[in-house]
Image (cartoon, rainbow, N blue to C red):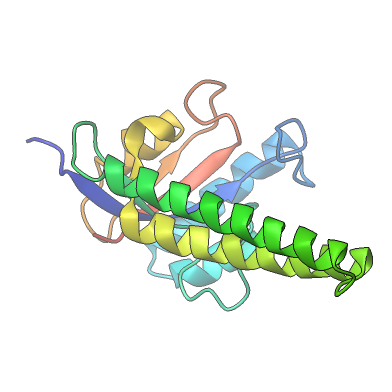
Length: 180
């Protein structure tokens, strides 16, 4: 059976202190929690609720499906959409930064106000980036191997676990649900 071109996944990262995430738990506590979240998800508990309650990845307030990720398989079309989306976000950031600089130079805006405005703009870009990422897809090769290793083997609706591994899942355990 061949793998699909793309999968829509939702994941819950459960990390620990010794990873770059520096979550507030030991490795053993993280592994135990990952197994508990996996069992609860497989029992049919609301996966979005589990992600909100337990994931060490940031989730935007009000996000109805936190941890959503569309993954494009090796050779699947869509890489160019991803690149265009990132380029557009970068261009928007550059334009906004130049506008702020001009407003500061003209005296229209104080530096402190510009900093607050830039922080708000960056947060909006982050939200737009998350939405674009969910719609355009991430090339499998650009992600940690565990997403593809687990996600592409799951049937829609199925839940799996990527165990912590320095190479394939260096941030901790990922409880992964395939939505499509």
